[in-house]
Image (cartoon, rainbow, N blue to C red; front, side, top):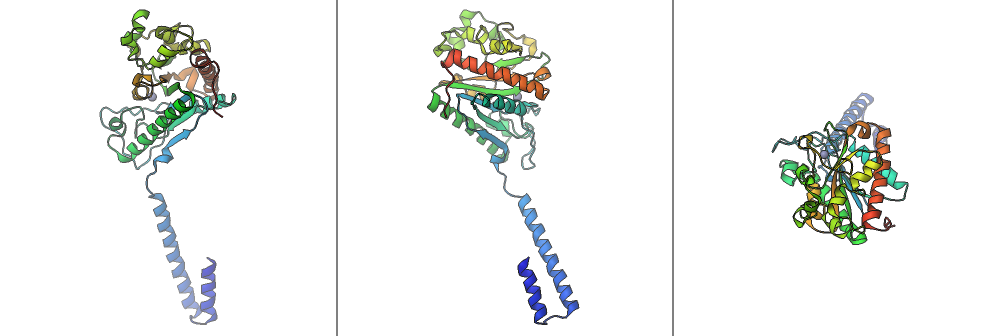
Length: 323
Ligand SMILES: [Zn+2]
């Protein structure tokens, strides 16, 4: 505004205007400047939609990729509500907070998983669906979906380059009445109920999201053991204090349990599609796990203990760190 003050002074010094006329001029000019400021403010509000504002990505230093597709609560007006193909719009409450608690717990050991969070509410974009069902044709939703998935793909490429193999975990929260963690390996409950011999057959291995581990683990454990043996992910989590299915104490969900066997992300970012990175969809119950900061922190301790034990038992002698 300094230049305006100087401009007014010049006008008065030159006695070009009388005082009343000058006052009118000053008020008019000030109102004009006020209008211009408002126009600028409106311009700022309607800036182009930026997909990067809606996806969190953090580079990791261990061969674990953690994604959170349904924890977002942002509902930008630039994205239409989803209504195609029986769209589910319920968010997975507190899964972003759960992921943060897990990252904090890993950090105490100097470990940092790769982290990808979708910050958009599921009513606007579903990050665990194919692109058409996820976005329902909205171009801004599709831009966020594309960024979320490219960050997972970049993380997969990095893990493969640096560590050769690893584990992708898609973090969710379920609303089923049984308060236990559900692990999805792309196997339905009737498949998990099959005899060990069948679970270890090429036919069942070919549809599993941990098929690379089942064929290449350092422990020599078979597919059936990796699903529900002593050192299965679910059994380790169970031992750490959080009931889990499948595990050695709860090997098979019932048909009526509405058990989640794994969705789009687990199918696309696991050894089901080939490669050396396995995948698990982890559906966390709410009561006693996601429902308070204290419980989320307790689960984070159990989760970190489970993941490190799982890596050391089946993948590596020690957890490799890329510093
Ligand atoms: Zn979910």
